[in-house]
Amino acid sequence: MKAQFPTEQTESGEFQRQEDAFREWISNDGSTPYASAAGRYHLYVSLACPWASRTVIFRKLKGLENSIGMTIVDPIRDDQGWAFRDPSGKLPPGARFESTDPVNGFKFLSEAYKATDPNFDQRVTVPVLWDKETKRIVNNCEDDICRMFNDVFNDFAENKDVDLFPKEIEAENAKLCDFLYNNVNNGVYKVGFATRQRPYEIACRKLFEALDQLEKRLSTSRYLFDNRIVEADWRFFCTLVRFDAVYHGHFKCNLRRIIDYPNLQGYLMDLYQQPGISDTVNFDHIKRHYYMTHTEINPTRIVPIGPVIDLTRSHGRENY
View 1 (cartoon, rainbow, N blue to C red):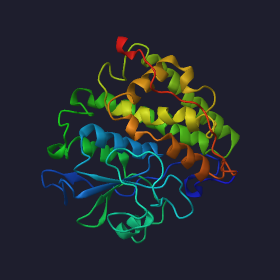
View 2 (view 1 turned 60 degrees about the vertical axis):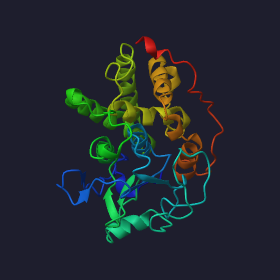
View 3 (view 1 turned 120 degrees about the horizontal axis):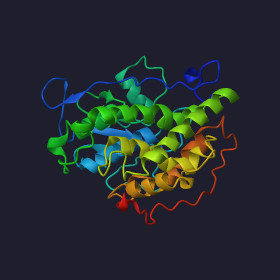
View 4 (view 1 turned 45 degrees about the vertical axis):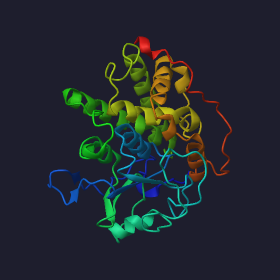
């Protein structure tokens, strides 16, 4: 099979994700060239992408909608990359979906990358945090962006008391997030983008071993760290909410579905039902992106009409 992303594929058929190119930092103490300010920065995301969706969730939970603008790219990425096209589908309140970029008039997100680094020649990814003052990308790493939304923008946040990186569990949260990234978040991509049988099977079994461990962990705890929702929960959520819709079928992660795990399914519904979170989830964008973009995996580009997913039912997690 032809590799979806040739530069991120090993000769043995394994997927190795590229590193984020832009990792500069916004500060509120003058320690970096980028000062925290309301209205200065703009977030570009895809509602289909789990990495970008985590930044959308953090922006929502911290109450930064009025301080950080957001534009959503079209879910279908073609040979020209992520594009700004006509509106379609449900959007989060306050989000903008433009036929062109409202900040610079770009038609493709790649133009923002070239404006920042004319020699950039890697895959263009979301999310992107853009500085309107210097007209360049500050950061395209979702981990960094989430941390900045949590900390350095707090002066402008409507929900200042929300802390998704509590100091008392900092080390434990970081360790769990590494586990989630390697085995689950990026794990589904290692399965889906494997181009040979053995790497596929190794990655798939590793993914489900991790899901089994997390199912057990959540059998005695409402969230990953007792009764408090932290970064690790939203990191996990962004993969779980896409799992049965796309990863199970499209990526061949089909040993089990999330709905087959009582605790994982209840946990997923619990997080989905948190205030404002359902507004950040768009199954239309998710399904059209994966099934219509990855033509090496799905050459017909047919988007399945199922599965039926209802995340609004009673989850019963209050008793944990």
